[in-house]
Length: 75
Picture 1 (cartoon, rainbow, N blue to C red):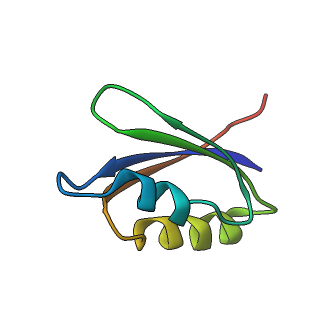
Picture 2: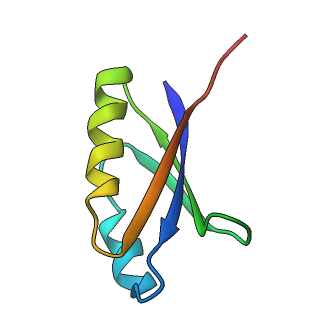
């Protein structure tokens, strides 16, 4: 299953360290963006349980203030 995880970095975060921390299995892309969030992480995992684990791991990375996980819905 595919999902996007929107990431908001802490104001004092070292973005390069946060980017490195986001290189984990299941993550297929990372784009820095402008707007209410600072990055969009794309991922591909086997099921919702794996997505939950990955989302919690990302949320625990140093310099990450908040995340929003958005699973893709396929028609």
